[in-house]
Image: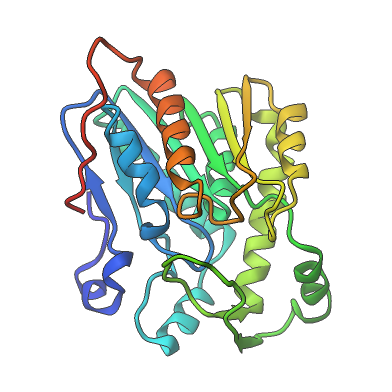
Length: 271
């Protein structure tokens, strides 16, 4: 499976490289990073799943991960809801060719994409952290006035006490796409039939915790919600990241590859 075209290799950040953690596991998980971020953001989740005898694919979503700021702005403006959803569907289809059971995990925008694809009945379980099903009020306000424009503003809008490479600007076209994905995923929550795990924080500065109740009240399958209130939005890398990763790894193992007498193996840290 080609995760990155040859001409992209030199144009993306080292931490934006997509990767596989593979063995002989009968089940696999696809981990999706968030808006403007990279595979680095979800690496702790990937390693926790791999430690529990699950193979893991971590792609770089279209439009993301580029080194040069000019190319960042150019490529992120090309994304569309249909493009992103088709990309994830194609990944699931390809992984299905080699694995009996497939799960999805997503952070923020990746969570909205994961829930949307799960609602189409394409995976056996889905886990999300801070799923972007509702935009912050100030984003809604900006999009109301400027969503029609091509506006791009250089601004580091996230203050994070940890390393996480991401695009440090706001793009009206790309944010409009994020809003459309959020609305599409929210509208399809009633079509969720597979088991769902949601990790969120009441302190999240970007995504309103009300999204958890939306999922619980509308999903047709079992929903597990856990709160990690010492963390903010980027849950895999924040202060409770190890706890979040362990919880998601356990959930996906139980749903996709029930534990045997074996203990969890050491995570593959070579990627």
